[in-house]
Image (cartoon, rainbow, N blue to C red; front, side, top):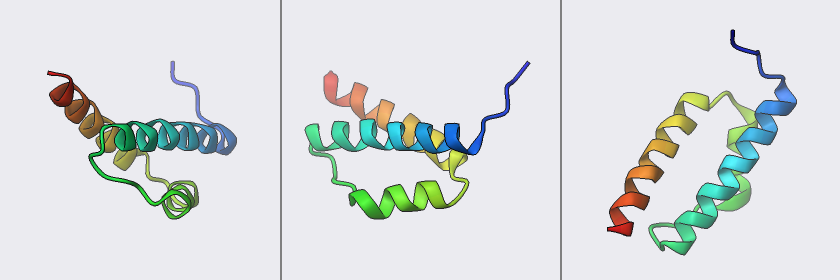
Length: 67
C-alpha cells in the first residue's frame, strides 16, 4: 500500500534530492546547477518523473566516474 505524499513531504524530498545531486555534481565537476533557480522550479511544479530520471542519470555518471 502506497502512502500519498503531502506537499510538505514532496517539498522536503525535492530539496534534499536537489542538495545531494548538486553537491555530488560539483564534487565530480560534471556540471554546476544554478541553485535557487532549480530549487524554485522543483518546488514550484510537479517534477517527480523528471527527478527520477535525473537521479538515474546521476547514478550512471557516479558509477562511471568511480571506475
